[in-house]
Image (cartoon, rainbow over all chains, first blue to last red; front, side, top):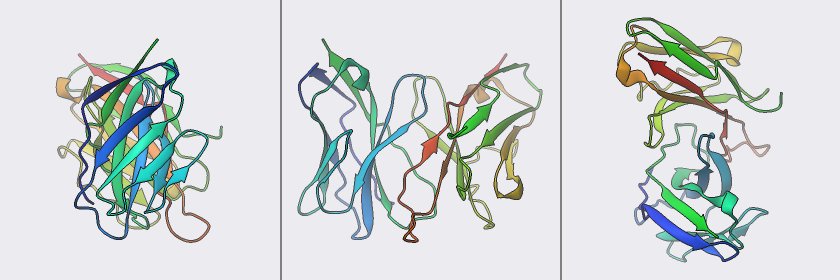
Length: 111
Length: 118
């Protein structure tokens, strides 16, 4: 599975959009982009995933560049409860192997 | 319950003792994963089970670590002769096959078992 690069930390004001970038320049054509987050002292939580089209669900939006070498997770109206470590992972959609987590981005939402 | 259940939630043991950590995955989930997370660190993959296939043990840090999955459901992670560096939160996750046949990649995690080795 391809590797990803994320900034180690980011701040966001409460109520504003949080835009978390991820670079995955070596992504293969059959690899999906997944986002998880881990709130302090809890297990990781799935957020969203996509292949090449932008995706939106009740938690977030995922914007993938046309060349698929990078993506952005958008939390449209960040709240204090969105403070967490956000992990961007690329993985074959039909993969039956392990899911490798990197170091992620520590998002701090401030009042 | 509907989620992944792990037990015990907390375990304190003495160096050199063996410990067993249990994971009950979501019913019907064929894939089961073990990770560990040391204080302030990221998730470290340990082992992965998929149905009746041979498990992927590539993440186990030493031969003191082993895991089994009985009947394709419950899994037990065993750490023999525990060391202080084994202190961490051990997380279990499970996932299922999408109705279309391919995995969606969504893992459901338990709350973890916190192991402290004195």
